[in-house]
Structure formats: structure tokens, C-alpha cells
Length: 136
Image 1: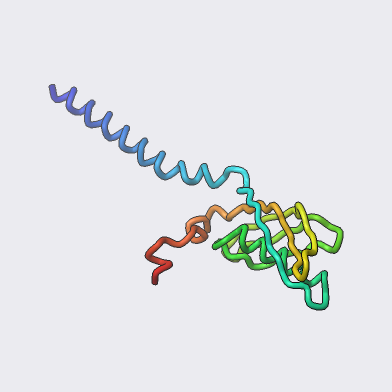
Image 2: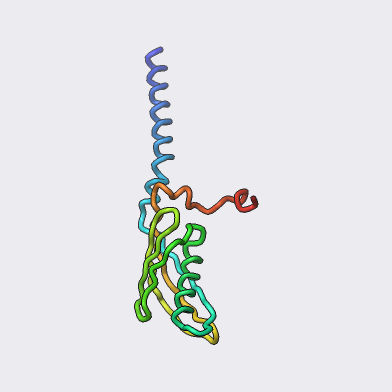
């Protein structure tokens, strides 16, 4: 009878350890997936320089795309190029591709598709803030 109790205890402990391992490993496996794809649109008023308005519109669209991940640096495409890259402030990088751009009235509008790869060590720090953190 004591042997059966010991076997059951070992079995239950093994299942518990396996579940804890899955609980820890699953988020790590999800972070290593393909970069997340985002679509966004940004616009900027054209005052004197259309190329400056284009750059401001690209940054506005990227900020919308990566939301709270902390956009830090953007490599702007030259006029005519359709792709660029950016780095995230807390670790990670991404790239973007311009889908459409046009001057509409006094605004320059850019629509782009961006993909970002967050550094695995910083994924928790880059998560969207909770309701309590936003309220504070």
C-alpha cells in the first residue's frame, strides 16, 4: 500500500512539474514566432517641404503601428524607396514597407506595413501597460 502511495505522489509531482514547465515555456515559444505584422496610416501637413512631410507621416504611421513598444530610431527611405527600418527603444528592431502614399490637400498621407521583432529578454518590459499603470 505504501508503494502505491509513493508512486501516486511521484506521478502527481511529475504532472505538476510538467504543467509549470509548459506555463513558463509557452510564452517564450510564442515570442519566437515570426515578427508581428502591423498596418498603419500616418499623415502630416505639408508646409514648405514635401519630403519632410513624407518623413513625418512615416514616423507617425510607425508610432501608431508599434504603439507602446517605444519607437526610438527610424532609417528613412529616400524619395522613391519603399522600405526602411527602425529600432525599438527597449530592444528589438523592425522594418516597414510603404504601401501607398499621396498628397491629399494640405496633408501628405502614408500607409505602410510594419513588422517588429521584440528582443526576447525585453518582451515583458515592452508589453502594453495595464489599466492600473495607465491610471497612475
